[in-house]
Image (cartoon, rainbow, N blue to C red; front, side, top):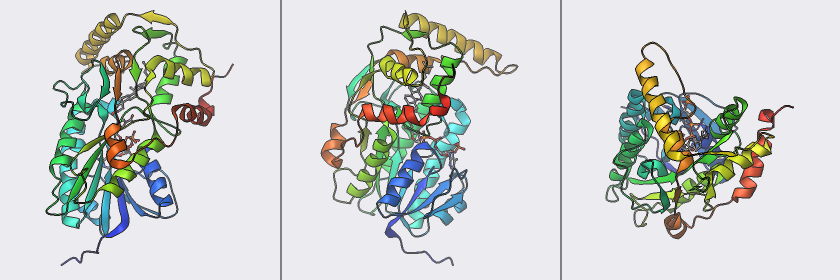
Length: 345
Ligand SMILES: NC(=O)C1=CN([C@@H]2O[C@H](COP(=O)(O)OP(=O)(O)OC[C@H]3O[C@@H](n4cnc5c(N)ncnc54)[C@H](OP(=O)(O)O)[C@@H]3O)[C@@H](O)[C@H]2O)C=CC1
Ligand SMILES: CC(C)CCC[C@@H](C)[C@H]1CC[C@H]2C3=C(CC[C@]12C)[C@@]1(C)CCC(=O)C[C@@H]1CC3
């Protein structure tokens, strides 16, 4: 019979710890004196004090081995939102998360912190100062969001204070910062191809973009506040920069910071959305013979042309959360870190 190592409160595991957010989480946890195991399908970096366990989170035996002696688990693994593979999203985000929960219980883990997403309530229409009690989206904008909803429900429903198995979900929005493989690289690539000339809509829609260090900080506060008697058990928390910004101002600041021209011509939101839908139908129709990846997907157009910002009052009150880095400083640090993507004259 296998012996179980007794969990220690300062020993934690980060599932998805090789990724963008995961690595910041690992770095902050080390700074706070935790010993950290990373479980991921790839090893993204090397860091003294971090043990890597490579495997798929759907694989129970691989995960069980990585969770020995661990009392606290952060689950921030997911296929990339842009991958558009329904079966993969379902396998990893839904079935895989069910496996994570069962394996954590078997391994004696006491706390699970899920990285969910504020998008679980977003249906492609305006959300202004959205609170956590908004209903889940009935028509999620993509497979990614559909499975993030199911994932969050599984994790929050698994919370059982009687059994000492405690869960909480963090819902960040629009994470950005140095080393992000998504937002800035996609933006710069779009600009290089001459496609960042247009503002979709009237340019006044407000959106949350959240600096990655603030998101990691929110996760750690949640982990440290999670106790059987605490009000946070089984709840979801928005973590944002608490400074909603005009979507197109944010994009322009990044572009100008990297010496690209900001978008200046306006296009009506409805028109662009309909065109993006038609293009998407064409992509689906041609998929058996041709793999096309349009830049302006209906999902991106909706995110670029509607308000979507969220209240983080609950996190402030229950977790004592305050953003560590202001939006202004976050943008400066991000732009400076992408000097390799700067426009060459
Ligand atoms: N980025 C954003 O703006 C937002 C992100 N989120 C959530 O934050 C979390 C982290 O996102 P982010 O850091 O941007 O994503 P990343 O893709 O950078 O990190 C996710 C990590 O998980 C790994 N992974 C994927 N599938 C598996 C699997 N089956 N088993 C083990 N590891 C796996 C990935 O490997 P590989 O790279 O090889 O796929 C990657 O290393 C996600 O849950 C995402 O849904 C929420 C709101 C906004
Ligand atoms: C081509 C341009 C119109 C837009 C380029 C920037 C976009 C790549 C990003 C703007 C908002 C971002 C965002 C996400 C991914 C990157 C953007 C679409 C998420 C979908 C990532 C996963 C989430 O959970 C929600 C995010 C919302 C905002």
